[in-house]
Length: 70
Image (cartoon, rainbow, N blue to C red; front, side, top):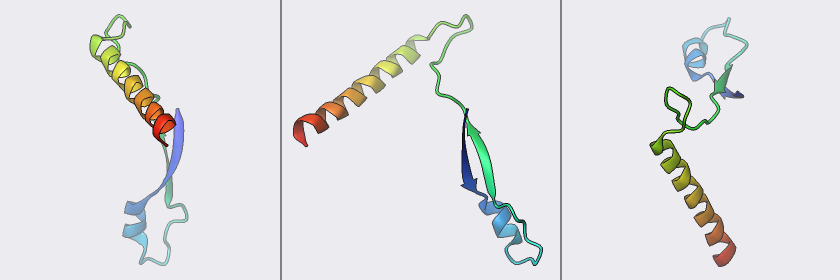
């Protein structure tokens, strides 16, 4: 899991006028790892394989564009 820190705007806005405002206004959140979608048996689904194929084709196209034209 990857964690990142973001500013807690809700707590800040609720307590910004108080004299005893909170010390910590940042929240650590965990983002789930990116995984291929699988069925109940653990095999990748057709949609997941098509999605990964399109993503890699787009990535290769962008890299190829920048290598050739820039």
